[in-house]
Image (spheres, rainbow, N blue to C red):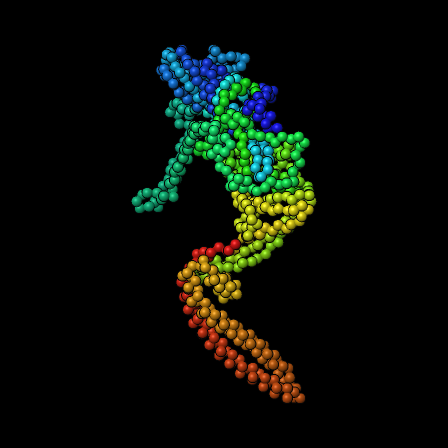
Length: 633
């Protein structure tokens, strides 16, 4: 497949009728085009060069292109004398061009470079509007976790002239380029000043100053209107020049590009659930003439593909250029990533290709076609991929695999967080466990990635081996493998820390501090201070418990005494209840005696607690812990 394509050559030219929408850029000149650099922001850099033996060089272009030409024109003389000026036509108040040489049929304008009349070897560069170049990818999945990647660039010529034998470069970037409109006259509006004589047409009002001014005669500052500074001006930096290219040999098989770890890449064996090898199929190979591929140059974060061979792109035509062809780490696996646009993806994973960009440059956004074992598997869309990054591109939905999920929330892991100004803060984990129930209905084992949406501010706790936590995208890729007709529960544990103010004498504080003291990562000074204070805390807690018991008993006695007195009042006039009255009176006496003893003990406990708490407050005030060690995984 790719071998036959490579034999045709690295250039595929196709006439596209839709490109006949109009011309862009300079469409005619006495200097031929030698080099074209196309960007992905609607502009291209053109270089023209040649020998001139007269006093001027003319360029024909549309009026709308004159501004870009004048704003970016650069003249590089290789020999001879200098260029004197550049003249261009304007429009008068009627909107008609003041250019007697303008072609009324094509509405072209002349821009004239005036020379000194001597021989010149000129090289002229400028930027003009041009269609963006677009990438297209093919990926052939091979055995052993490897794949063959081909990168094609599609170039469209709407300039109004053929590009014959030019040096072509495609830049995977978009430098700042704006429409300068330098070819359009601008006359600023000025204020109108008139002289209407000295006639007074209105009676001015008088001003009255009251007698209660300040003693120095200066009005109060609130009567003066403050001034306001004007906005600061800003200037945009011009775009950098195109970077220099490497040799085409840098891009050959086994060149200087970054390779994956190990011979078989970083992603292991390919997934066996694939179409069978076609009958009589011949494994596709890479192009034999690798010197015809583009050289990848990276400079200042910009990737440029320099085509080593001269390229011809006729006007109103599109050309597809083979930029890159190399072996990369890649495999076909499955990805569970529910998408609202594909309702069934909530229960079934996508069939995907996953590969590493080891080309040394940026791969731009574009369509990618996937092949394996002589079969076309499907198409996907590759997002911009930086060098060394991994891409996971979906191209089909696999209904032989089913996935269901449910979540559970819990609170665990209370620990010491901070001590400041005698106050204690603890921290606990809010645990969110997501369980993915996966079933493989196929006859072969599969490798599956689960795209797990990450909760903001949380961390993964003991994630499965090989998990990729993509914080920038708010998701994690969790791998798993299932045997044929197998089932599996994949658990993803996320935890987020939530702080809370705590009582030093609570159970949670005791557990958290003891865990901190047992942690070898604890601050030695803080640990020593807490170790010294903790027996004192034990005394305070014991006396607080004793005092609480006394308080409870006093409350019960007081309640009982109140009830006995109420009973006495009820039988106060009943002469037959003398025995009951004596019993109640005796019980009230016992209660009163016990209350006196407990009250004395409670007062003593209060004094002891007050003394201990003074020492405690002095001790904890000296402790400062800005941040405790993070929880262990």
